[in-house]
Image (cartoon, rainbow, N blue to C red):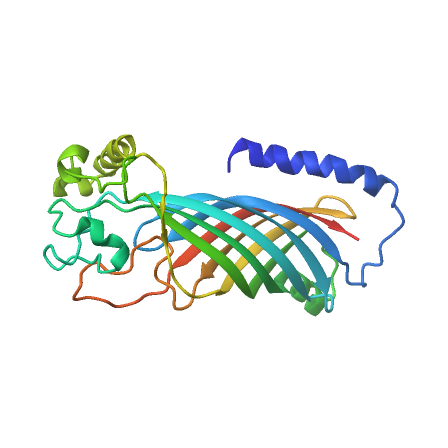
Length: 280
């Protein structure tokens, strides 16, 4: 994680510590505790074109019993990605760019290297099952320094994908294979892929001017987390979850490799985050 993420969590911890110093009365260990928290972390798109960015949000945890709770979560994520391989219009060798939005690349022999920006705002309800609390309950023991849990969620999100399809003059990019230095051999090495991407970023104007339209507002996710109780009323943790967009294979702006193969596979994303939660 970036150093500023840790600084962010530490700063929030000290702010809430003032509150905690004034509420030192003993918490009933058998009573489920409500919690209000914030989170921030790395967001990665797992689609045809990989991308990365950041996410942040607010959570409110609602206890059902000592081992299971519900959590209302709001989440804002953003990611950018760029391909190291070209895509072609369907008019060129049965390319996969069949949608109307890609008409500017019709008969363009060198094609287009997809470059996109993805933004989503999500509201979801998560179910949290505590593994450690289940174990301690079965063993009738006391151990509350840390907790390991699994989660699942269902929610709704507003999503927006924009691509850098045109140059600053509103025209399609030309001669991209030549200008990017692309060749199949470079694709097989990390340094070669990075070189292609670096060259493309110097060619593109990074103005994601073209919006990709698609339907689908539902999301579901599953994952796990580790929580440390650093104070009677404050906990810090690390969590990772996989987000699935059912029926949506377009959040990176690309659906098909060729016009013959139009198989849809739901896009996914991975959100790895640090969080702080205050028990109220």
